[in-house]
Image 1 (cartoon, one colour):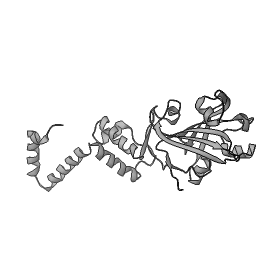
Image 2 (tube, rainbow, N blue to C red):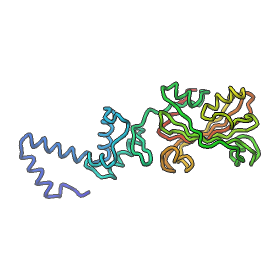
Image 3 (cartoon, rainbow, N blue to C red):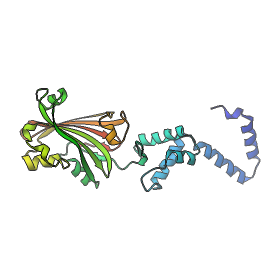
Image 4 (cartoon, rainbow, N blue to C red):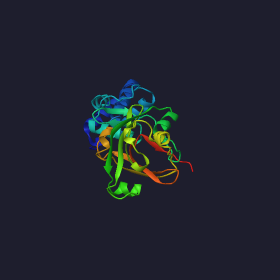
Length: 266
């Protein structure tokens, strides 16, 4: 952008404004404010104020085109502003659907022996689970190592999509040692596996190992979460043991990064 101080039109315009009445000074302030609102930071701040005031009660922001026109700015500048709010966890984007106001993050404490549905209910949220696939497969090396089995051993693989208040937030792959869970694939797998283990097989968790890493969401997970592959996410891997400290299953969880808060008090 050029130096407006060297622009004769701008200089003459300012001289003219300075020569006018108090009403003209007010108009100048409006012009300056309009120019300021074209910056990404100012637009982000203005949008945040409107969000906090409850202006978008439906939870969905206007289209990018409508917002660009409202702020008299370019689509590029607007997207920069939206990106700032997204980075703060104030809004989130879904492919082909637009921008939405982000709900509170789900609080997740790995030390609590709870399950997804119970965790959501305790926080006043509604959880649902969709089974994408459930089948017996040959364990690849990393799964076999986690389950302490030989590579290629038969394991159960359950892939599920989990939602909070209707929003897809978690894609998870469960790998189970069939020796502990005969006939499990015939059960209702939309329910909590923790409850199913206990009620159907008398198995409870006796220990677990967690690994939590930020990273890009892979192609297998991203579309189910309504984001582009490579979008930021949280990967949580968990290896579970039963009461006898035997490894019984492992989970690979892919979370939307803006949906979860890991909170641990030791």
